[in-house]
Length: 241
Image (tube, rainbow, N blue to C red; front, side, top):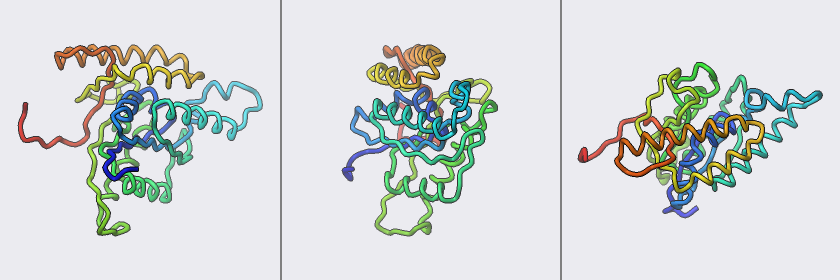
């Protein structure tokens, strides 16, 4: 990676999450020359793989392998690098070793932004657990005394929370709508890797169309497809317009 190349980091609980909720942002920034890394904490082997378990004799390792393959193919379509942690699924439980690795990723990547889940989700506690994990790694990475290196550049990046499946129930209020028109077809192709979740393809198409409509109305600029984000920390600016 060039020292001048900007980077982004996605911390996702499950493989499907980064495709549905933030695939447009990933593809858009890759197109702009960013290196984007996806840290996938689990394979979604239980909750996201309902259809796999309907077959008699299915084995856990086979489900994990299938979901890993799907996630790798989806990430490749979006142009991102992906790393897995195998922290389990329903429930997701990270370890100290995983946290150390996540801190190292923050140091190695020095991301310009971090994308992760909402702070609340009463339907899936794995999601806010991934957010908590991402926040903890970001905080520790700022500590000069943690694996001290006076030559290491690091600036705590802004964190953007991507849209949960049922935002109203998660107390989620978007503060930013990203125009993803120019990469929509890329995101849609990544959708189609997730064949077992075909029932969600049109749902998340409608979500993107709704956010595009709202984005156009709020910006006064033409927009068809959008992704919603909530900024976790305030942005410091010199002027309001």
